[in-house]
Length: 224
Image (cartoon, rainbow, N blue to C red):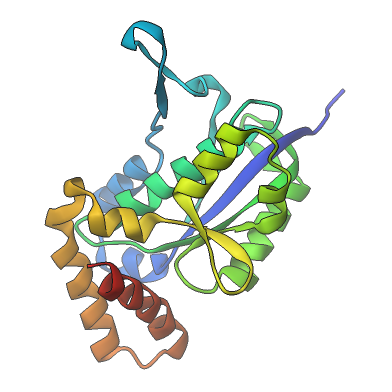
């Protein structure tokens, strides 16, 4: 019998992908997806200074379709939500560090998911997709406040607070721009992102596109 699993589910869009298709070679586009599907592991230090994954890699699932990346973890796994958010933030930062930086937009939900080989569907996926498409608006991955309110573990709340902030529209968003602007590992990529922002704002006549890059510029001007 086929059944749903309850998961925390992230739906993430790579913005501007239609334009990337026009200017990049097939090999260059494959490299983008090779980076997007890298499975980063969040470790914790146990006794005797041994590092082990907070969540085993086999419990973290990735699915790529067209210009979208899905990441999901069963919701009964400890720290599933903050670890999922960490993985989303890592993806956002790594996409900014590409030769041609890519902004991403997405949302996280909680609910039913069915996955079997190349089949993926469920209410949680639909919810995350619609929220990202209709409400994320700018390059951010948003998390409904309700998911934060459901956290009961103090450590999970501390982790959540450390990697998100509450925006004016009531959604939490990942602190990826903060990380990108302040972590030593990203220093060499910042000029590239600033140049992209400047170029878009100087040339684009598309108000929706300009708003996305103005969002990035406002945060980077504030943080740098």
